[in-house]
Image (cartoon, rainbow, N blue to C red; front, side, top):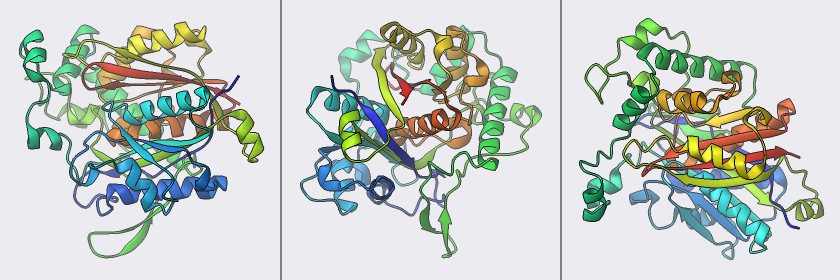
Length: 388
């Protein structure tokens, strides 16, 4: 029986998604091509073997339009015979890319496939496709859901209220995320997963970018409590306890155990269970809760069997609500920091989380890891990985 294993996973450091951010001068196709080339070099992969490049991207317009996955392969200098496809499952796009890649490998449609994603939010702003072409829901969806908010910040406020999450609790979660990320940087935990990128700064000087740009040190509850709550008057969600707008890309090499052995590759992890779930599209961000339950049910594992969790910190209320609903050990949740500290490059985030997860599992001998992330429209992917 065929399986799906992750041979290696690589990412860029995450840059601030604004003019002057470390990666803001790099076209998203070029950024994607960079991680493809790095992945091939690290694994001694002959690109001729690649059956497909399955690539996540959310804002598929402008520089990220016209199938960024295909152009990434061409930009990497890979043979023209290597196709590419671009996936949009909102913030879970590149996690879904891994699911599609794993399913293709297990079914025999692929032997060797690369999955990953990209988002350059400094060059293609979040919501760019909406502002260009109007509201995408259509009259029937808007009729079904009165006053459809299409505002994730509002959903995050609703979740905080539902789970009784106050401002101080959310701000402390944000401080923990930054502290964990800073500790991971100081201890060199990211070095094995980050491929350096040569960049040119706003002043014209060239340097190598290899450290996540959004991590803040020395924050305090007092400083965070002074930030405005833009989604609700006297609310609890602020810029300080929400994910950062970011640029970044990540890629994973996926094949079967047999093909890996044939090519001299030692896999890191096996895709044990992969599911997707839907939830209401108004609060829209609670999807990781039912997705996790579905993954555990199908896997036959319990929450206590999982040694590390990567739950995307779109907002502090999302990951904390998930933790309270599942009863997961808080110390195992985003042990190297999450999107509030490291950033959230939308279509690249699923692959970034998985890259961080598989390296953390290997470095610490953790048998099972689980990843999940909320997605616009009320969805979530959940993946359980097993260390090989």
